[in-house]
Image 1 (cartoon, rainbow, N blue to C red):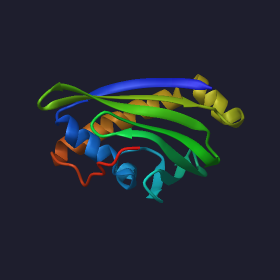
Image 2 (cartoon, rainbow, N blue to C red):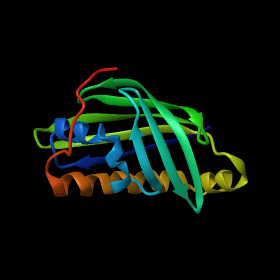
Image 3 (cartoon, rainbow, N blue to C red):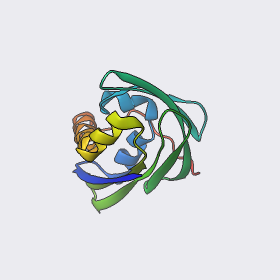
Length: 149
């Protein structure tokens, strides 16, 4: 297992950042390599990714979700093995620190080499930067799910 931890400050309130993050189907708009995310029910998502020409599908279960605080997940089926948590920290009324921690298990030689070269860390950092641009440009979330898991 490899561990990635990255964070970014976004110029929106905690509620706005959190609400947008719960809109999993919008992830392809700012996550590189994510082709599609389908919300199957309150706790199950289906992912289709394409990285370096390799398409993968997997399901992820939301294991914990506390509004304005955190969303945790783990894969449960498919071609990727990972678990993580994203947390939201109020810095002031209009600024939030978004922190993502993820453990992933590289599969095969190509994934292992890419992992050792920091490809996953680089991708996560880029995804957070694109999330910042996405939410700050909009100034508002595209939707929200305020339930708790």
